[in-house]
Length: 184
View 1 (cartoon, helix red, strand yellow):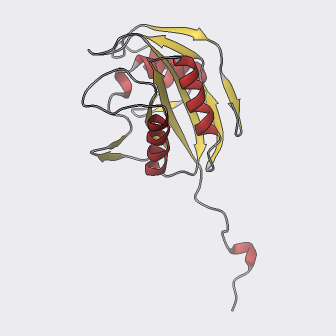
View 2 (cartoon, one colour):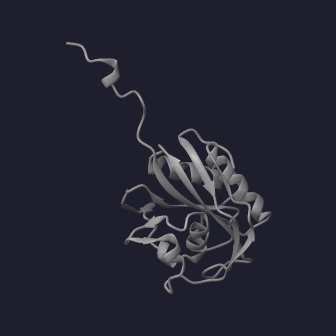
View 3 (tube, rainbow, N blue to C red):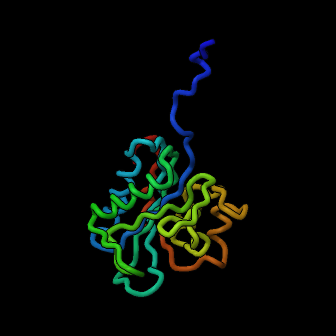
């Protein structure tokens, strides 16, 4: 007996919500962040992308020459975590980012913060990002973009952004928030 075509699943993997952080503290910082966001949003497998306003933030740690411009994206994507990691690292390489041990200036830095319900703990990929709750430069833009966004531990982005566990100067420098299906 043949299976009816209406019962056969023809679409790909189900889309998940992913949170990506973007930052730059070299050259034309805003341009690097916005260009990376545009590249991510136009990638096959990303059906929706929302970009937070841009924030200027103080670097955490030693080895930085100037403040960062940071933003957060919320994606609807069918890309697997490793494919999203490869996309981000490819964009970093194209902008001249050199990965060195520890800290240092960056043309662009792209991190996967969350990817659906995935829990990954590998050398080069950790989801959720292990320092998410300490990173004001991620939590504040995320709360600005979607205050009710659920985070691990049962709290919202807005609640986490107000937490005393997160610290650092985070100042909105642009209201360039964008939403859309494939463009920013």
